[in-house]
Length: 195
Image 1 (cartoon, one colour):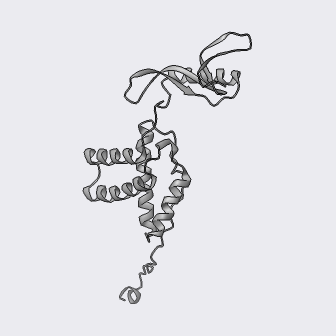
Image 2 (cartoon, rainbow, N blue to C red; image 1 turned 60 degrees about the vertical axis):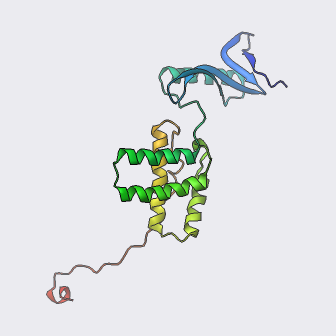
Image 3 (tube, helix red, strand yellow; image 1 turned 180 degrees about the vertical axis):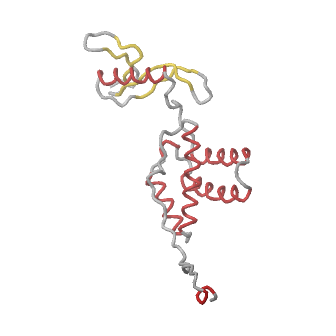
Protein backbone atom coordinates (compact mmCIF):
# COMPACT_ATOMS: atom_id res chain seq x y z
CA UNK A 1 0.00 0.00 0.00
CA UNK A 2 1.51 3.27 -1.15
CA UNK A 3 1.20 6.59 0.61
CA UNK A 4 1.47 8.42 -2.71
CA UNK A 5 -1.46 9.73 -4.71
CA UNK A 6 -2.28 7.70 -7.81
CA UNK A 7 -4.55 8.31 -10.79
CA UNK A 8 -7.97 6.67 -10.74
CA UNK A 9 -9.38 4.81 -13.75
CA UNK A 10 -12.96 3.79 -14.50
CA UNK A 11 -14.17 0.28 -15.49
CA UNK A 12 -13.04 0.84 -19.10
CA UNK A 13 -9.50 1.78 -18.02
CA UNK A 14 -10.08 5.45 -18.84
CA UNK A 15 -8.55 8.05 -16.54
CA UNK A 16 -11.08 10.04 -14.47
CA UNK A 17 -9.77 13.58 -14.66
CA UNK A 18 -9.51 15.31 -11.27
CA UNK A 19 -9.91 12.11 -9.24
CA UNK A 20 -7.01 10.73 -7.23
CA UNK A 21 -6.63 7.81 -4.84
CA UNK A 22 -4.45 7.11 -1.82
CA UNK A 23 -4.72 4.41 0.88
CA UNK A 24 -8.15 3.23 -0.35
CA UNK A 25 -9.51 6.80 -0.12
CA UNK A 26 -10.54 9.08 -2.96
CA UNK A 27 -9.63 12.74 -3.41
CA UNK A 28 -10.92 15.38 -5.79
CA UNK A 29 -8.32 17.75 -7.21
CA UNK A 30 -9.73 21.11 -8.21
CA UNK A 31 -9.04 24.82 -8.22
CA UNK A 32 -10.88 26.09 -5.15
CA UNK A 33 -10.94 29.48 -3.41
CA UNK A 34 -9.80 29.91 0.18
CA UNK A 35 -11.37 32.30 2.73
CA UNK A 36 -9.64 35.33 1.17
CA UNK A 37 -10.85 34.39 -2.33
CA UNK A 38 -7.46 33.26 -3.66
CA UNK A 39 -7.91 30.28 -5.98
CA UNK A 40 -5.49 27.39 -5.39
CA UNK A 41 -5.33 23.81 -6.59
CA UNK A 42 -6.38 21.60 -3.68
CA UNK A 43 -7.14 17.97 -3.00
CA UNK A 44 -10.36 17.40 -1.09
CA UNK A 45 -11.10 14.04 0.51
CA UNK A 46 -14.30 12.40 -0.72
CA UNK A 47 -16.58 10.18 1.35
CA UNK A 48 -17.27 7.64 -1.41
CA UNK A 49 -15.75 4.16 -1.15
CA UNK A 50 -16.14 3.04 -4.79
CA UNK A 51 -14.79 4.47 -8.03
CA UNK A 52 -18.31 5.10 -9.37
CA UNK A 53 -19.39 6.79 -6.15
CA UNK A 54 -16.24 8.94 -6.08
CA UNK A 55 -16.79 9.99 -9.71
CA UNK A 56 -20.38 11.00 -8.92
CA UNK A 57 -19.27 12.93 -5.83
CA UNK A 58 -16.58 14.67 -7.91
CA UNK A 59 -19.23 15.77 -10.44
CA UNK A 60 -21.43 17.14 -7.62
CA UNK A 61 -18.44 19.00 -6.19
CA UNK A 62 -17.66 20.57 -9.56
CA UNK A 63 -21.30 21.57 -10.04
CA UNK A 64 -21.38 23.24 -6.65
CA UNK A 65 -18.10 24.99 -7.48
CA UNK A 66 -19.58 26.39 -10.70
CA UNK A 67 -22.66 27.61 -8.80
CA UNK A 68 -20.38 29.09 -6.08
CA UNK A 69 -22.11 27.08 -3.33
CA UNK A 70 -19.04 25.33 -1.95
CA UNK A 71 -18.11 25.64 1.71
CA UNK A 72 -14.61 26.92 2.40
CA UNK A 73 -12.09 24.18 1.67
CA UNK A 74 -9.44 25.36 4.10
CA UNK A 75 -8.96 24.26 7.69
CA UNK A 76 -11.54 25.85 9.98
CA UNK A 77 -10.15 28.23 12.62
CA UNK A 78 -9.80 27.24 16.26
CA UNK A 79 -12.71 28.28 18.45
CA UNK A 80 -10.67 30.38 20.88
CA UNK A 81 -9.12 32.42 18.03
CA UNK A 82 -12.46 32.82 16.29
CA UNK A 83 -14.21 33.81 19.55
CA UNK A 84 -11.67 36.61 20.02
CA UNK A 85 -12.34 37.75 16.45
CA UNK A 86 -16.09 37.70 17.21
CA UNK A 87 -15.66 39.91 20.28
CA UNK A 88 -13.48 42.38 18.35
CA UNK A 89 -16.05 42.48 15.54
CA UNK A 90 -18.91 43.19 17.95
CA UNK A 91 -17.00 46.04 19.62
CA UNK A 92 -16.11 47.49 16.19
CA UNK A 93 -19.70 47.31 14.90
CA UNK A 94 -21.13 48.96 18.01
CA UNK A 95 -24.61 47.45 17.54
CA UNK A 96 -24.84 46.45 21.21
CA UNK A 97 -24.44 48.54 24.34
CA UNK A 98 -21.15 48.47 26.19
CA UNK A 99 -22.67 46.63 29.16
CA UNK A 100 -24.15 43.97 26.87
CA UNK A 101 -20.78 43.50 25.18
CA UNK A 102 -19.01 43.14 28.53
CA UNK A 103 -21.45 40.44 29.65
CA UNK A 104 -21.33 38.65 26.33
CA UNK A 105 -17.52 38.79 26.33
CA UNK A 106 -17.41 37.03 29.71
CA UNK A 107 -19.58 34.19 28.40
CA UNK A 108 -17.69 33.93 25.10
CA UNK A 109 -14.38 33.77 26.99
CA UNK A 110 -15.79 30.92 29.09
CA UNK A 111 -16.61 29.02 25.89
CA UNK A 112 -13.15 29.84 24.50
CA UNK A 113 -11.62 28.32 27.64
CA UNK A 114 -13.91 25.29 27.49
CA UNK A 115 -13.62 24.53 23.76
CA UNK A 116 -10.05 25.86 23.50
CA UNK A 117 -8.37 24.87 20.25
CA UNK A 118 -11.27 22.79 18.92
CA UNK A 119 -11.81 23.61 15.25
CA UNK A 120 -15.19 25.18 14.48
CA UNK A 121 -16.28 22.24 12.35
CA UNK A 122 -15.34 19.79 15.15
CA UNK A 123 -17.59 21.33 17.82
CA UNK A 124 -20.31 18.87 18.78
CA UNK A 125 -23.54 19.15 20.71
CA UNK A 126 -22.00 16.90 23.38
CA UNK A 127 -19.09 19.31 23.94
CA UNK A 128 -21.54 22.19 24.29
CA UNK A 129 -23.73 20.22 26.68
CA UNK A 130 -20.66 19.39 28.80
CA UNK A 131 -19.85 23.10 28.96
CA UNK A 132 -23.37 23.87 30.20
CA UNK A 133 -23.05 21.15 32.84
CA UNK A 134 -19.79 22.74 33.94
CA UNK A 135 -21.51 26.15 34.16
CA UNK A 136 -24.34 24.66 36.22
CA UNK A 137 -21.73 23.18 38.56
CA UNK A 138 -20.37 26.71 39.03
CA UNK A 139 -23.77 27.63 40.49
CA UNK A 140 -25.17 29.73 37.64
CA UNK A 141 -28.89 30.47 37.56
CA UNK A 142 -30.93 29.00 34.67
CA UNK A 143 -31.44 32.43 33.07
CA UNK A 144 -27.69 33.11 33.14
CA UNK A 145 -27.05 29.71 31.56
CA UNK A 146 -29.49 30.62 28.78
CA UNK A 147 -27.60 33.89 28.21
CA UNK A 148 -24.35 31.89 28.12
CA UNK A 149 -25.87 29.63 25.44
CA UNK A 150 -27.08 32.68 23.48
CA UNK A 151 -23.52 34.05 23.46
CA UNK A 152 -22.20 30.78 22.03
CA UNK A 153 -24.98 30.70 19.44
CA UNK A 154 -24.02 34.23 18.36
CA UNK A 155 -20.42 33.15 17.73
CA UNK A 156 -21.59 30.09 15.79
CA UNK A 157 -24.04 32.25 13.82
CA UNK A 158 -21.14 34.44 12.69
CA UNK A 159 -19.23 31.27 11.73
CA UNK A 160 -22.20 30.23 9.56
CA UNK A 161 -22.27 33.68 7.94
CA UNK A 162 -18.52 33.45 7.27
CA UNK A 163 -18.98 30.03 5.63
CA UNK A 164 -17.19 27.92 8.26
CA UNK A 165 -20.33 26.00 9.28
CA UNK A 166 -23.53 24.90 7.55
CA UNK A 167 -25.61 24.40 10.72
CA UNK A 168 -25.03 25.33 14.33
CA UNK A 169 -24.16 22.44 16.67
CA UNK A 170 -25.90 24.43 19.44
CA UNK A 171 -29.28 24.39 17.66
CA UNK A 172 -30.63 21.15 19.22
CA UNK A 173 -29.79 22.21 22.79
CA UNK A 174 -32.86 23.14 24.79
CA UNK A 175 -33.21 26.19 27.00
CA UNK A 176 -33.03 25.93 30.78
CA UNK A 177 -36.39 26.37 32.50
CA UNK A 178 -36.50 29.66 34.37
CA UNK A 179 -38.75 29.74 37.46
CA UNK A 180 -41.40 32.43 37.16
CA UNK A 181 -42.58 34.64 40.00
CA UNK A 182 -46.19 34.32 41.08
CA UNK A 183 -47.91 37.66 40.70
CA UNK A 184 -51.28 38.37 42.31
CA UNK A 185 -54.15 38.65 39.89
CA UNK A 186 -55.50 42.12 39.25
CA UNK A 187 -58.91 42.74 40.72
CA UNK A 188 -61.31 45.57 40.02
CA UNK A 189 -62.90 45.16 43.46
CA UNK A 190 -61.97 48.27 45.55
CA UNK A 191 -61.47 46.34 48.79
CA UNK A 192 -59.01 43.92 47.18
CA UNK A 193 -57.08 46.52 45.21
CA UNK A 194 -56.54 48.66 48.36
CA UNK A 195 -54.32 46.00 49.96
